[in-house]
Length: 304
Image 1: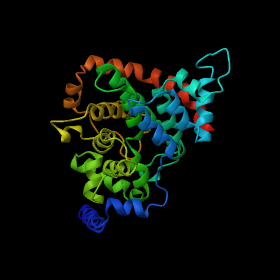
Image 2 (image 1 turned 90 degrees about the horizontal axis):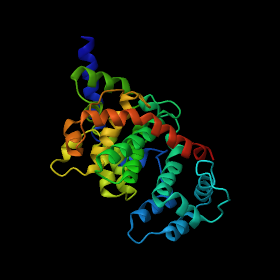
Image 3 (image 1 turned 45 degrees about the vertical axis):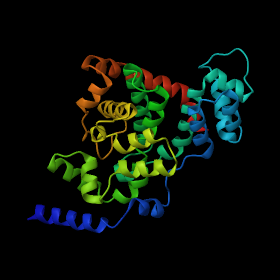
Image 4 (image 1 turned 45 degrees about the horizontal axis):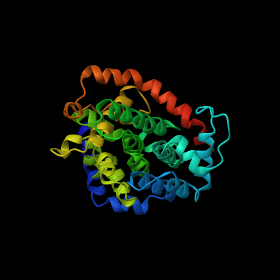
């Protein structure tokens, strides 16, 4: 009887939420994640065939905080230069445009990803650890498979769960019900979200990505990082890279929240990427070392 009442309540909640749209989430959530204009412009400029150190430097110069971070990184012990770098253009040359893009995205996302995401039972920095881990994992997968550019995989991995930040307040009182339903029905967490809420964190994240005018392949990866096979036969490689990177990050226990390990890895994704089980193990072995190197590279910059 209790179980019947429980699922009757779920059905009522699902019906109540059916009228809520993705636009409602954006309009009615007071603390939505945002990306600074300078970071978005740097991201787009790096993709341009006409970009160079000067064009990137000019974009950085309009954001004092980002400029300071780039110069600090160029002058850090990590690069070991015997002179001080004061010019942004020179800093871009030293770091490389792709590293600058990654840095811009790290600096832009850390402030809101490091906060607790209560709706998904994520404490301080847990969301960040998972996003950063997925960025590193996706980049390693891209490097091993040579399926897509490593910097695109990194950026997309970093942004893959932005929908959780936006949706957190809406699931705060429903996370246990969603988890219970997923476990009872033997379905992934995102499928349980759709059943109870009418949409999932992937769809919300993709909607935000569209509003930010992110590249189409990035938006698709955010929307489908749990179900890449739904895009067949034309699955952008970055979608598979982020899917596998996300799986590796969860398997390593980085930033697990209310959805825990309720996701598996797509064998079709591995096949499309041409990754064998031995190569996946190799990526797993390299994961922690790469994560720590990136933390050393970017870690102090997230505090300023």
